[in-house]
Amino acid sequence: MTVGDTGKRRIRLLTVTAVLIVILLFSIVLDLTQAFFSLSLKEAFMAIFGKGTDVHVSIVQQINGPRVVMGCMVGAGLGISGAAMQAVFRNPMASPYILGLSSGAAFGAALAMTIPIAFIPMFVTRPLFAFVFCMATMFLVYFISRVGGRVPTETLLLSGIAVGSLFSALVSLLTYVAGERMAGIVYWTMGNLSQTGWQNTLIVIPLILAGSLIMATRGRELNAMMLGDAHAKDLGVDVKKVRLEMLISSSLVTAAAVAFVGIIGFVGLVIPHILRIVIGPGNRALLPLSMLGGAAFVVLCDYLSRSMFTSLGILPIGILTSLVGAPYFIYLLRRRKNEVGWN
Amino acid sequence: MLRIEDLRFSYKDKPVLDGVDLEIRPGEVIGIIGPNGCGKTTLLKHLNRNLHPAVGRVLLDDKDIEKMTKADIARYVAVVPQSNEINFSFTVRDIVTMGRMPFLEKFGGESSEDLRKIDEAMEKTNIMEFADRFINTMSGGERQRVIIARALAQTPEIILLDEPTLHLDISNQFDVLDLVKKLSDADGLTVVIVSHDLPMVVRYCDRIVMLKDHKIFAAGAPEEVLTPEIMKEIFNIDAVFEKDPVSKQNTVRIYGSCTKRPK
Image (cartoon, rainbow over all chains, first blue to last red; front, top):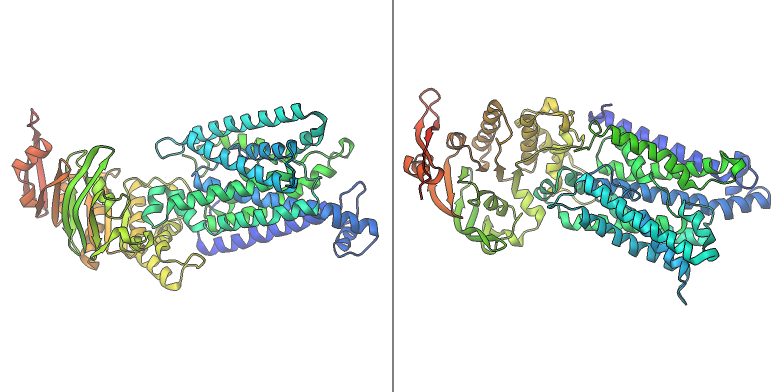
């Protein structure tokens, strides 16, 4: 697939944007129809604007509404974080899930759920603890995997997996120790959008939008950094500053994404990677489109997880994204030599 | 104009540059040579503040480089690095466009002026026909031209080349240096080349700076610096500087290595 020609590329960008918006909007309306009974598309659409029966309106506005908005935010956040991390590490395998950031953030959030702090409500402590542990994980993984100024793929993945496993084990430990008080946490660690009300969603929105804005405005610098730090420095980029900004903002966004809905894996890996193959590696388009793609992917998966296996009840969404993402990850490993961006 | 005053630098306790004074004049092509570990590349890295001097100053048009912003420096000095291996499928035009980065506002795009400079850079380096090709599918020589085009898009006064011929076959070595020399002659670009390749350096450089033991050992016209005695002492080779009878270009004929390393 060639996307070299500048004019063709612009048309392709517009096409991809339009297609993603359509998929996103369609997924949103589909997801709004799902409840303990299904609404029709028309009923769901009308209920957004408060028209229809009280039951329909309350399902759409109070139950499914925050869930869908949270799904969009989480997907957008994980998508752009993945894209930014792949540029910073110069490595298309980097993503919040693979590098253990999601597990680190999950541990922080689980800790906040286990140990309530007086006077500080949990909707504050959960994202806060998640952010602290997410940052800690990020720097731990980064410094473990750095070899002489470079971050080789092998050490990056290995240290990400090691640190991620450690935090996963700690989350399991918490669940075990806390007993029935933590019954919800098991479901939460598999990724779960069903516990989101407007309160949690309204906390997450500004965190994810702020972090994403920082990342999206650094597309040009990230492009130069993808050629190598030396290239970027020679072009006048303050590499250390941009890298630090990216590590902090992607931790913030990942933490906000994980704090209330748990671990939804592979979004940050699959979405930027597919987009990079279609529109090319330029980050100025890739970063915002990864938000759009991530949002569409998560909301669509949420719809599928609620509608596909009705006999089993609702499938945790993290299981579904991993069922899609893990095979893709394996496919990448097999094809690594041919894939763009592999060294 | 670029002036280096009493430049000193060390890695940990090991001195790498131990008092270097040098003036690089506008429009000249200057070659920095010397044995491994003499501090050539370290010197080059100071010229665009990739390293900060422990003692001494680097002055661009009498302005201390330490007081300039990174973008200011990138508007003045462009670099063609030693390695240009690029793994992502950016197009040639994408890469050359990056040369305009130091001129762009954070939220602005490239102006028509920027686009014109990008086209100009690609025309001068003869890569217009490759504009839409992916950089990671190109040969080393082609990539080097693209990186030179990116450097030109920075509209710099000085271009620094670190071992520009290292990974190139012989025909591409001539191509790249012919191009650089042409650009210097046509636009008055100042060029600083760090290289191990003596015949190439004397062929293309107006002036040679030889480093030894972290200091300038000799500087001047190629024939003054590359005397048989100096080449013997510094590189441990038997060689003579001469005008090539066919091309009438400066060259160095190496006819052997000294058997014993002189002290």
